[in-house]
Length: 533
Image (tube, rainbow, N blue to C red; front, side, top):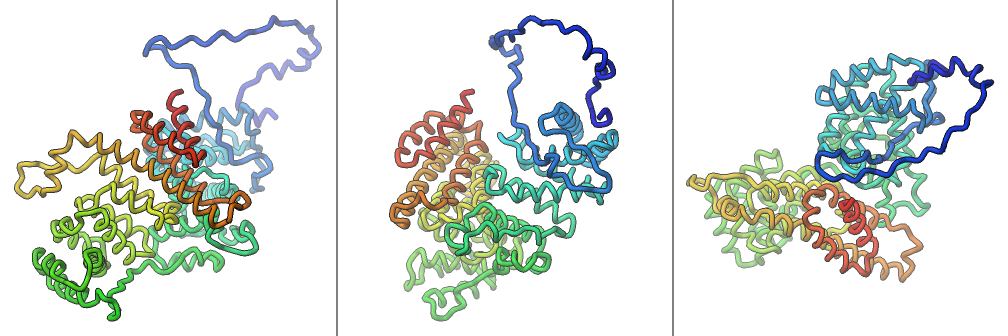
């Protein structure tokens, strides 16, 4: 067994003599009490951490040469983790050098499955909880680039190990924390995009997890089903519809959905907005002046204000559907007129609804166009939040693109664009950001607490509606939607950990109002206790 050991044990050579020697009784050893931290110069005691393990001895596949995998809790396994961590900390910014050093480390002990441990270590970095000190996106990108380079350096070994690890994670998807879900989807889709999307798709049998009745409103929220849906949507962002449809097996094409093309409803002459849409399309194609466009919208008498906004935004999104540049130019040209029309919460909701109707099957365009509206000051962050947490959008809260938009709006609220107030071209909205810069932190805190409060409201609404739908038998059926939203709440709190540390009293106040939603209060109090340690 010496060739399987990473720790030198010279006493083994004297094992036969020591076993026959006289045994001595040693005095009882008592650990000293921990020294209290009295000042900032005293280092804190070492804290415990969660050990991430994917592989055990039974789950390693048979390759050209059988390799020994140390036990999950053996000292050898921890030594491999320690060496891998040192290599990663020093060289993670240079993925080529880091991958070469990992391969060199694995070659020092060819009889031990160090490559399995390295893949396990990198995936553990991606999925680490609590979130690593480095930004989770940076961690996902760095570890992903290293895994891709490892696969290129050893194409006959590393891809097989990654396939084993992903299959194990896939089988355990129902128990994955929601905080890890987005990171796993982002990494895995990016990894496959570098290898022509080739995978053992046929082995992913998702039908066994579904009841005999098949998909319904509840089972379509099953973690594995949601993973398949969001993972394939992410693949679409990195490729194109026909390519993904070609590589996926028939049983998975149902998660692909319709082609991500625009849908313009006002080409139907039966709709009341058709005449206005025809006039606006003609004016937009001929690049009419902004004030003329606004006059055309406001002077139309047969439609209400919200319907006019819907027609205008659908026309802009329809004409700009060929590229980001087209629609961005239209938004920028008519930004002042759109701000004038978006004078209320309902008006801004109508704008979001119009854009999402045109791009129903394209989550990427929803994210990009919403971000543009926020940056132009046409739609406010608080109204985007109220839109997504409305009961009508309840299902959307399980989709990744929604949380991308919410995080974008919060980042914008934390760091709005900087302008020169003396520049004549500076817009009124930009000057508003300059004038109210002192209130930025207060507005950010209000936005964060408002989102937490809306979590409570939508969870309470779901609980009441579910009780009515199941006639009081809700405990007999798994509630996957509730699990997703609670996980998103936990993720949201830890993502903005530093900001919420200043909002403890506000969180406690919201949690005290959650008598009918004990799970919500438990997440809040657990988060608060984590911050107090």
